Image 1 (cartoon, rainbow, N blue to C red):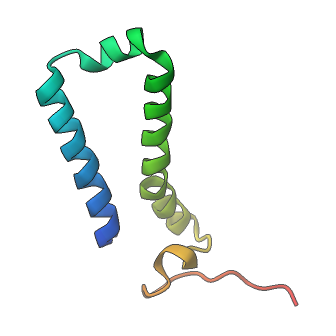
Image 2: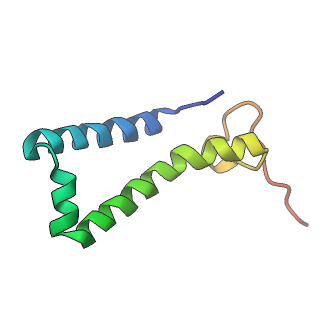
Length: 86
């Protein structure tokens, strides 16, 4: 089962709101013209989107593989903690 905390929901809603405002202000095809006119800025925006979505995608994948996720959800029941080498 997918588990979303408040910060993940806040990230998605903030990004969705920003994209909605940008689309409303700049109109249809703004990203296509941004790619054509400013490719470096468009590439850095793409990297930022990838970076923001990584915690939303990687943590559930780690959970399903049984890998440690104690940095993200230490308070959840069934969280896997790493085995420390002594």
